Length: 314
Image (cartoon, rainbow, N blue to C red; front, side, top):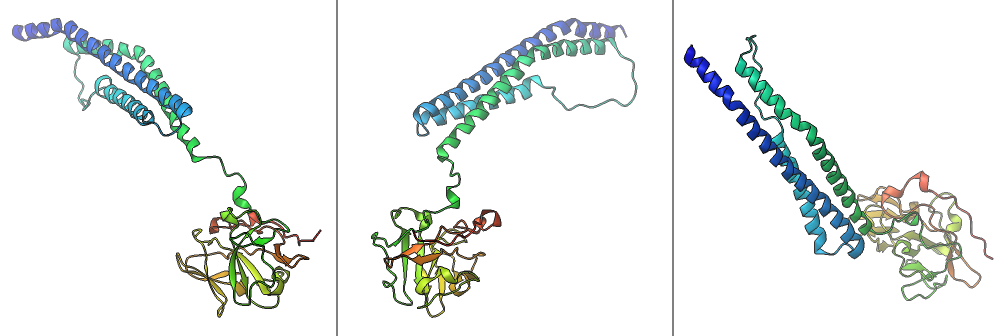
């Protein structure tokens, strides 16, 4: 019994030394973590400054982002490894009297817990590092370019816009024979890809592709967007015998007699039709812009439909 008590007194006598060593180790870890978070904050600020000043094509961007991530990651790892309680933990089921050595161990644990008060500084540094990094990660969004706004809902076709070919020559009503077709653009906008249109001479007399569209096809001319409603590929093949348009990319087939409704392939919505008329000089012109946004079927919603106003020559 006396030997056991002597051993307990020896262990208790060594406890203050162990406590001091634990506290000193935690302080060293806190300093390392603080330095890591500060490095992460500085690297994030360097990233933002370099991006604003030199753009998105300098090696400093990648280096500073890597350093910021590395600093935050190291700090979090060191915090979890050195400052958080280490398991496994097991709760004793039976009640046992508290011995002096256990009381001493509790006092040591409580003394180590006093350092939590100082860790509020680390928490603030962590929040600062994460905030700076999160803000820096938003900067590359600027490289996506200006927002499209409402430009995707309209083309360059306007009431009275003359149709021109790739050589910027206006198209007269007598230029294309029945069965012929041509890629056309609004005059002055050869560079507008969204305005690319297929002009087809489907018949010699007006063709009602849908109820109310008889006035859209003077002399049998009809015009449809060349941009496929499936994936935006160019629709470039026309078969006059069946009066169908084919998109060669994914084999979508459209029936122009039925408003260019898809009859085969993955496309689910018709190609938008452009209302046409003829001016006093005999040139083919647009009555208006497309009534629905052109392109993949995402745009085919009633929300974006525009009312049709027949063109009146001035």
